[in-house]
Structures are given as C-alpha cells and as structure tokens.
Length: 323
Ligand code: ATP
Image 1 (cartoon, rainbow, N blue to C red):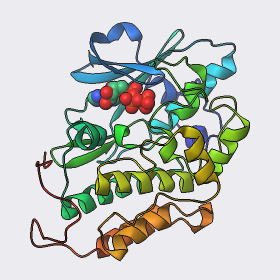
Image 2: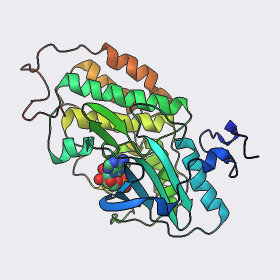
Image 3: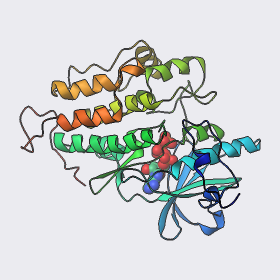
C-alpha cells in the first residue's frame, strides 16, 4: 500500500528486504535523466564518482555493475540503499537518493568540498597535533556510534572514506561493500585479488576468511567490532602518518594479523592512553574490542594539551592540517 510508510523495510545487519512498492522507497528514487553529470571526481574500486547537479551540487557514485542476473540482485542494492535514507548525522555524508533502474545504478549524495583524511595524511603529509587528532577521532566515533545504533555496519571504514570539511569530519561509503560484489573493479589488484591499501583495516576474523575465499566470493564476516578494528587503523594513521605493516607484502600481513600479531608501537612516542586505544581496537577477539560509545568516553578523557607543541610530542607540526 502506497501510503504505508512503515519501517517494515528497516533492516538490521542486512536481513530484511525492503518493501519495494512502498512510498518510502520511491521517494528516494532519482531518475538518471534528472541528473546532470559533470566531470569525473575519481574512480574507486567499483564505482566512478562524478560531480553532478541535482537541485545543486551533488556527488553521483555510479556503480560498475557487471550483471544483474535476477531481481534479487537488484533487491540487494535497494536493500542497502534503504539503510542510507535513515541516516541523519552531521558526521555522515548526506544521502540524497539513488538511481535504481538497471543498468544505471547510482547513489547521489552531497558533494564534499573538503579533502579526505587519506589526502591529508598520505599525499600532503599533513601533521595533526594531538588535540586535533583526538578531535577528528571523536567525530569519527560519533558518526560511527550513530551508524551502529541504527544497525548499520560500515564495512569499509578507512581514511579514504573520511572527509574533513572546515574541521568537520564527514564519513562516506557506509554499508556499500556488499553491493560491490556485483561490480567489476577499476583498479588492479594484486595476486591474491586484494586491492592495495585495504588489508590493514581488516580485523583478524576477516583476514582468516580471506584465506579460504577471494574477497568477493562470499560474504565476509563484517561486524560492528570489525568497524572498530578499522577505526584503530585510522587512529594509527592519524598518529603515525602511515599505515600499519607499511611496505610488507599482503601474505605477510594476512599471516601476522591472523595469528594475532600487531604492528609494533615501540617507535610511536605517545602516551600509554593513546597506545591503549590502538591495542583495544586491534584486540584479536572481536568481543574484546570496545564499542564507539566506550571509545568516545576514552577519547574524552585523554588529556588536552594546552601547548600547540611540546618537545615530547609524537607529532611535529611541519605543516598545518587545520582546514
Ligand atoms: P575505494 O574504491 O578503494 O574505496 P575510493 O574511496 O577512492 O577507493 P570511491 O569511494 O569510489 O573510491 O571514490 C572515488 C573518488 O571520489 C575519491 O577521490 C573520493 O574522494 C571521491 N568522492 C567520493 N564521494 C565523494 C563526495 N561525496 N564528495 C566529493 N568527492 C567524493
């Protein structure tokens, strides 16, 4: 029934299908023709992102869909999309709608004018001072805590999916990972079929299932706790300006993480509290990892430095990243 905008299409961890005829779905359906597509912003593993116009500036993420073998596949996409419309949080990208008519499947969101944390840290080599680092981590935790409270698992939290706009953190790409199984890749992967820069965000339980299956053969065991593990890696990037296990081949990383080994922190000159956050998030057993509510609590208690720079500070302010 059209007028019935119920939450019956609510899904928790992806197990309930949306009511396809409900007004609530159609409301978010954007006809592809209504979008004005401008230049390509970038290509990810499975999507091409365009700068577009739809009642103003938008980002249009077009999925490189290889096949839509049945209705169920399309349902899968709709199902994922139905979760985004429930998200309203200042640290999450604004979902505006989606094109759901095959073969053009696309997600329309607000256009982020800022740079990603990846660009700040790995390309520009910006250094964040400890207060800023903590503030960014708090905002990420706030956005992630909200997503988890809504029953949405991000599945691909990483510095490339975190924008910073005038000091505000905006998280993108939540919940899309399963859809990418339907897509062909843009980028080369290595011999194991693993895209570069992805492994260090994967929790041990996911690493272990990579042994048996190629990444997209089967649903990987993502969970709220695996998102927390990924957050730990982002916290490490913020502190160290690089990824853990830097320069090591994928086989070595998979083996170490699967055995419960962690990136050594001996060279990281940071306080015990700061390192403890890493160790907690990277706990081998998913149950030992804190949730984002607890993480926020811990981050709130980190001492605030009054000085912009102190001799013992782990991070030097060679270049300001305060955008
Ligand atoms: P991967 O596929 O490995 O996750 P990625 O995160 O770079 O890589 P996409 O998420 O597809 O891939 O993004 C492609 C490009 O588009 C990136 O440069 C990203 O920063 C940019 N982008 C994505 N969403 C937006 C947005 N809402 N506003 C502005 N730029 C965006």
